[in-house]
Amino acid sequence: MQLFCAAIDWGTTSFRIWLLSEGGSVLAERRSHEGMTVAAETGFETVLESHLQVLKAPASLPVVICGMAGSRQGWQEARYLTVPALLSEVVARAVHVDGPSRDIRILPGLARRDTKRPDVMRGEETQLLGAFSGTRTSGLACMPGTHSKWVTVGKRSVTDFSTYMTGELFGLVARRSILRHAVGDADHCDPGSSDFLEAVADAHANPADLSRLLFSIRGGQLLHGREVTSSYERLSGLLIGSEIGAALANGDADGPVHLIASGKLAGLYGAAFASLGLEIEDIDADEAVLKGLYTGARHFWPTMNTQADYGQIKA
Image (tube, rainbow, N blue to C red; front, side, top):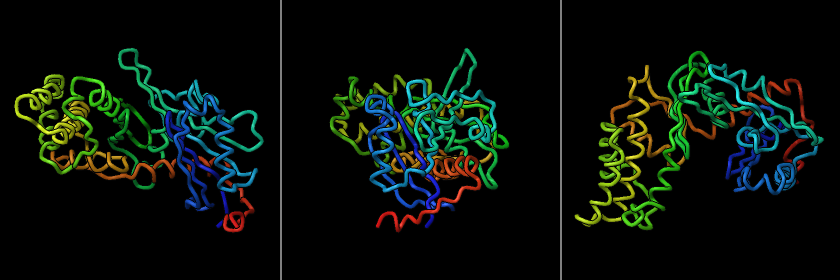
């Protein structure tokens, strides 16, 4: 297959690179923990080129990037677009990285600049660009993660969004709060367990009561001998249920919630929504970000035809 470009999702602590064909197929990929935090010290170009060399990509191969490489502390700042913003503007307002000989573009993030509820995202906008394409043009999206995003999209324009620190709170509460004694060394949550689903229902019904509900995990350990796996699953359920309850506090979504997720989080959130009787449409987060990056690449290099067969390069 003919090589077209390299596509990169560059997070704070993670790095993912794919080599894409002219038709958008994945020809090769690599993942590492060389996120922005590491790359800021090692050098963004150094990290990028080391992976491209392992993948035997030619020096002329262009690169499209989303995520924290475009932050103020990143490689080169790609300033936030203010919502409401058309998803097409994410591509149109990309920045060209100065210095490297190869053509490198970084997509910007989005910002909600209301002084009473300011908010930002980087990386998720590219998932949205990929997810809201084809016949899908509008809806409410739930994007679980360390900092979960709930995004309202209308006619391929992001009109509003909110961030919930669910994943980060889970890590802090489980490993650094008094509840660390209750969850112990547990590290797995069964999305079908009664402890998880009951906790989802409790917190969804009373999201403002989260603090009290969390401490009940401590009480369950001391008074009723609740096991660490049970406590771990209840903690996960409470935080996810509270997030869903708060996000939908202003009324149900008009149609299914678009759940843009992958891996364990897709399973947990999918089970939570189902247990609450809420309709969802599953969208794979990896596929969405890849489609978004490819959409950007096709805009930047619409007539480019890389004259290199990847099978021959690898050989």
